[in-house]
Amino acid sequence: MTHDPVHPDPVHPNPVHPDPVHPDPVHPDPVHPDRVHADPVHAELDRLAEKTAAQVIAWRRHLHQHPELSNREENTARLVADHLRSLGLDEVRTGIAGHGVVGVLRGTAAGGRGRVAALRADIDALPVKDLCGVDFASRVVDADYPGGPFPVSHACGHDCHTAMLMGAATVLAGVRDRLPGTVVLVFQPAEEGPPVTETGGALAMVEAGAFADPVPTMAFGMHVTPYPKGYVGYRVGNQYGASVLVRITISGKQVHGSTPWQGVDPMPAAGAVLTGIGQLYRQVSAFDPVTVTIGHVEDVGRFNIIGQTVTLWGTVRCAAESDMAEVRERLRRLAEHSAAAYGATAEVEFLQPVPPVHNTGPWVTAALPTLRRVVGEERVTETGATLGYDDVSEFIARFGGLYMMLGVQDAALDASGLPVPEEGGRGLVTNHNPHFYADDDTLVTGVRLHAHVAYDHLTGALLPAG
Image (cartoon, rainbow, N blue to C red; front, top):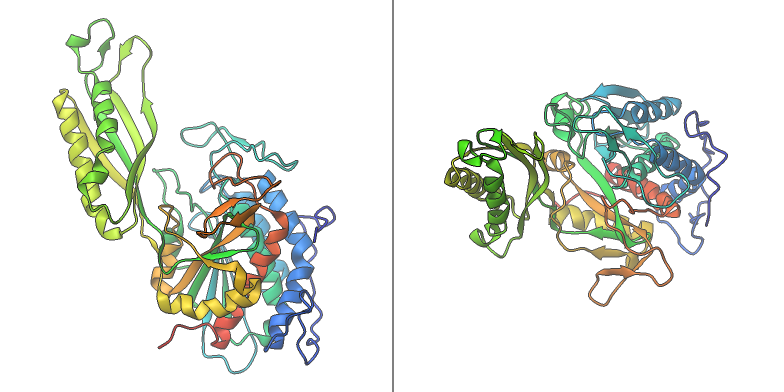
């Protein structure tokens, strides 16, 4: 179904006032009439989600056209907070760890056991040019961001995450009288990492007391990905790897380019470090992937000056968190000794560490019935491991829960379960690529997933054994 995204105002939307009447006692699914729900609230969640679909698409397109970088999500946070307030939530907290927003919805149904479902969306964008080809593509340039100016886009899909959770807030507020517990709606800034001179992200929200009252009994999140539209991918174990940002500053002695013997050139040392990094993977177990990537080289000078310093910026990723300490130590040793070989020095700093996103078997087992009910058993599939990272791990490690992937592209799964381009479609484009795209009509599936997971947890249907 195609939804018209034009009429709703994305900045000042009219709140949806759902029909409070319970569905027919036989519990037909108004969206998928061939399905029958054991719990009438499941059908109601689907009905309300379908009502929000056009508005969710409008929000997503507005956010896509107006992206904001990490720790600069002021307008995004305002849009979110205004919508949550329009729903009459019990609490709407703003300014958490920068521009974080938390909404608290306390259900009024009897029989609750104090369960609290935290649903999380990340709201920041990337310093990546938008080449996705849609008419609502971003043309934003942030001239003031440290290291900029940068083109800005939602090349990772956080616009989708934010819009889907805003829609889920609408749906859950519409069944407040049937919620036997509390839903915490978490809109997190700086998932992509704040500037290195600033703090931000998931851990900063925890440290700011965002989850002190109420304390979640589970956390849930999802990430749009290049999988078939409407498919849910999950993994028992590390869904994402451990990560840390690395800054290597190599210092020499500045001198004119015509007399290199009178100074110390840091460039050859930088080259030796870059070359040596390619051998680090051979120094740890081959059975758990690791990677060290230098994504940016920064120096100060001009063509005929041997500069004082060269700075290498990169990231370390480990599938097994236990490998991180060893990889860091080997990288430090490589940089220091390579620099010394050329008469220079190296300082290695590890910043913004993020633990892996770990889904335990009991939580996955508990969630699978919910996921299969929402998207269909044939669309729930196990994924492979990745070395991507997401600091939602800070929430899941503390409160339990799980993180999963939602397919949003023109794809199919091959015989081995890997995504391949769908014939005649737009192809497969990975997150963080300037051409990354997401299918609008899949967003309502994300709304339903959030709502069903939260409701099932509050009722006790989604709990790990024991």
